[in-house]
Amino acid sequence: MSDIRSPAVKTTMPHFPEFVMMMAALMALTALSIDIMLPALPLIRDDLGLADPNQQQLVVTLYMLGFAVGQVAHGPISDAFGRKPVLLAGLAVYAAASFACMLATQFDTLLAARFVQGVACAAPRVIAVAVVRDIYGGRRMAEVMSFVMMIFIIAPVLAPTLGGGLLLIGNWHVIFAFLTAYGVGLLAWMTLRLPDTRPAATREPISAGWVIGAFREAATTRQTLGYTLATGIVFGSMMGYINSAQQIFTDVYDTGRLFPLAFAAAAAAISVASFVNSRIVGRFGMRRVSQLALAGFLGTSLLHLAIVVTFGPAPLGFFLLLLALTFFCFGLIMPNFNALAMEPMGRIAGTASSFVGALTTGIAALLGWYIGQQYAGTLMPLLLGFALLGAATAIVVLISERGRPAMR
Image 1 (cartoon, one colour):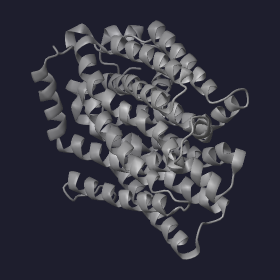
Image 2 (image 1 turned 120 degrees about the horizontal axis):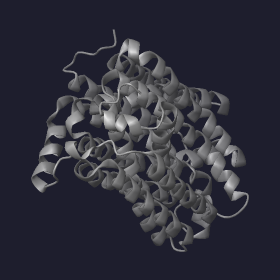
Image 3 (image 1 turned 135 degrees about the horizontal axis):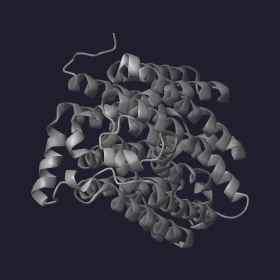
Image 4 (image 1 turned 90 degrees about the horizontal axis):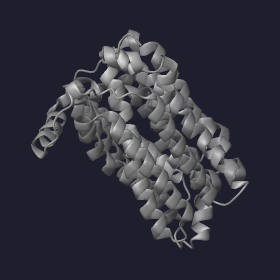
């Protein structure tokens, strides 16, 4: 890990493979907390007596809103007091909130605990990105983030299957018992192995004026703001898919217990894309790779929409193929958009990570909730969401780059 800037940190940092695994495990916590729930949503709906089937989506949406809110605070606090204390506190609260979810017997109680769970889980996400930015910069940061994303994307691929397996040995409460144990395990691992990458000499004294100034710097940096908005918009299409995936595969394609396998088959394309990105981004650059991928995302979304409008729902195999193509492009977009947003923010990496994470997650949660709530037994809301949000993302990127794309 020769790119580490602080010799003191270098001597205590885990070897590169373990470091990547640690960062991936932290970032995977949110994906795991969302996707492991998908097979259990109908059981939660029936067990807690929900009248509207779309209400079950709130189990995902409230978590994401809490996740967005939590990111606002964790970054500035970590810039002032160090990365590790904030990370450990977040993991401890996450484990406690997961335990509260496990004990919930009322839907409102479950939603409140899910919101707190999301707020706490914002700490691992913010700190993971800030730690990577503390150590790396430029294309090297994008390469490291691609390795991290490649591993962490395995979580949403496997999580529904894991959730379905847990449901074979118990009800939906067992899933939250697993998340509690996972949070405790991460807490122990980070306590023992991760040093603080924000040494005392580089910490910023926290004050309202400093925090406001740091957020203003992030919000007024054209590259950071532009790619943050673009990330949130394109991520919104994916949240729309996650919100309605269980209903689509069950109602439209009648996959039944095979839902986790169908979900994983499409999601695996994101992991493949993250690996490909780690191999090509150093040669071609973040802008060129992400912009070409965005063109592919928009093109496949429009093709899929045209097929459904003309012929109706495609057979399941063809549907999964089109989804996989779309998700492959998405997997090339996300690590590069995130790295581009963070690239100018080295001095205030923690606060900038809060800004980027909160805004992208908030935008994605609201857009994904709206798309999910339009579900009425067809693919049209989802595919329209893909196409419209893909087009909106392209417009934002063009504005951010002053109309000069880097795709050639």
